[in-house]
Image (cartoon, rainbow, N blue to C red; front, side, top):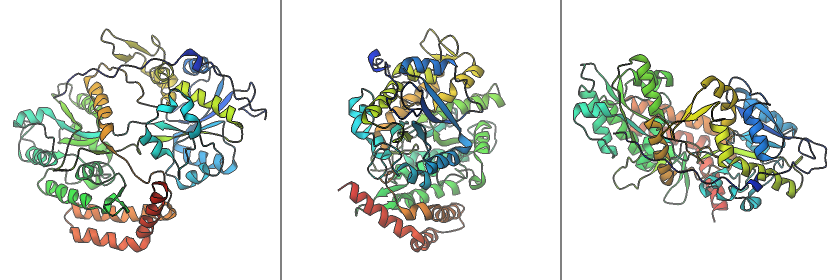
Length: 500
């Protein structure tokens, strides 16, 4: 049953002196030097760019004590634009690089265009406290080429219709075994009280990479790759826990506890099915509960939908865990150009700006905007956006450039939001990350997409009852000579090199 809880208290704002920083002192005459404004190439996830003289940029300029120019890159063209900038060497003073899994971008980042910032982080109040797990995932072959954009380590969990549990007299499940029983009970019973046929899980075509992947983590499977008992790095999709999870999930599917057409279900169709009472369990971000309620209410204003959020599912004697769905909490790097940020003193100045962006005042400005203009705080201390259109135009573009998206949590008037925030924070201590995320494998770069697709096809065939586990293992054997064994060898060697 959903409950209200107190959220984290905000930490004190950094001393004003930390914000009074001067511009880069490069004498090159570039945008990073002298009195010229700092240039920042950043990703844009909104339809239009904000006014450079708008309240957020003006507020940030005042806080940082320096002018800066945003070079916005539309999300749809970010790979092309960043690759072009890296290839030509014409990068901004600071560049937001969010596509670290792209091999060509990764190669450009490590080519000498950007500073290794790790030696400087300990000098700054906020940068020195970046989570070590996030730092581990942000290094590229042992080097930290920028300040990590820090995301929540683990956002996923299981959402279950509490009103359906109540209708059937069932308890909230906290183990894989009980979760499977609830899924089957939903399919066999009448949880809506209408006699309509429903199912348990509503899954979609990305099951292999998203929903099922999270479920397999409870069994002990890793996040993309894992270290096996022999000290070898292997893909999670060939591990024994992954296969055990497959056997369990197919059993639930065969009992009607998973939507039978899931391998062709698009995300939008999945959301509509959930809102239309066609299923009562979804593996997704805990923050989605609010959205599912809103969608259900848009279809039926009198809906009695009520969700329970679960973040502590376990399996047998496997310790509590959840695979990270955010790349180990790494949303990319804020990289400093070696061409225009020329000296170590320049690096310290720019890192001072980054440190200032992690204060409560800057974070609030990039999240909520200006009180009285974009948001208000009610008598319970909850933040409410008062002009959605204005917020989307003037504030939202900057939100994706926050260096730590979860550094400060704001109380919401929606209890689902508050509970999800608290649970996601709690889940961080149980997060499982990819041990080779920061390492390089040339064969992975060139062959993994094909290998993964072959295994995904075998997974789908198995789930549909069109293949056996022996067939799935045969698919694995087939791709071993197509690069899988080389990937395992290369990643194992790289892992040993940086973890000896």
